[in-house]
Image 1 (cartoon, rainbow, N blue to C red):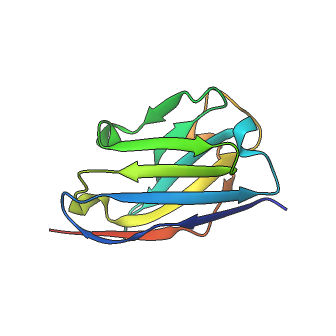
Image 2 (image 1 turned 90 degrees about the vertical axis):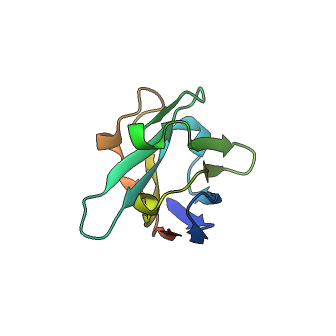
Length: 123
């Protein structure tokens, strides 16, 4: 059974940092595209970052230079380090997997989701 469990969310002040973790089970995360998404109140879910089997990463423009996606294959775990956080980063953050591909990751193709973890950034 595919399962994704996020942790590490919380409340921080603007300029602070958080590290989100996503423990994957039921599949080998290193073999597939993995990603982070977020959904702010009243807005649609948007892709934040992806990482493929070759550790090639991509980011939404608003995350470039501030967020870093990575993975630990031995732990089957995905991470998102978020620095210089802004109030507009406030959202529920979701871990996701695309079990149909391992490269050329596309935000639109992710089909497996975790339950989400809340990130709140105050000004």
